Length: 224
Image (tube, rainbow, N blue to C red; front, side, top):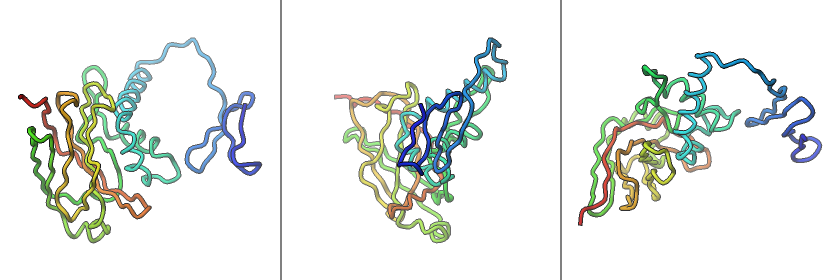
């Protein structure tokens, strides 16, 4: 059954007969129900579905950051759709057995150029703190009005792709502060964490920079 949202002039959602109404951003589409088929998928279709599944699973634990990072990439579509489309085309690489995530080219956010030119990070295992320090291109920051943009760091262990395998900073320093810390947890999953950082405006526009991949670090419980 199709449902009209927000009165007679609202959007349709759901199924009406053989037609399904789908809303993506500000646009509503009508499409026919998929026809059942007994044909086996081609090898190309199997690979394409596997690729889609890989990106979807990888994105799932970091969706709160994706929703901010890709909100303005294509305003007519939802952030999740924007991120899926971009990363399917740019965030995977072909292997002998199919596809895998290309961590360096994967984006948590997409927008203006990321101004970071150099960086270093310090892992304080005793106090459970990850601290990132950076230098940035002042010309880019001025051109895109980034100096007061807030820092978002995402530390992601992708071995099991669980939300419990994600660290992120709760307090947020601005770009010109040149430093940001993330509180870690002894109970967090042990293993390799991938580091992503982007900056976004908190003035309501949610304008973001591209996320930047900074490599990995190993996390383990503190030895007592």
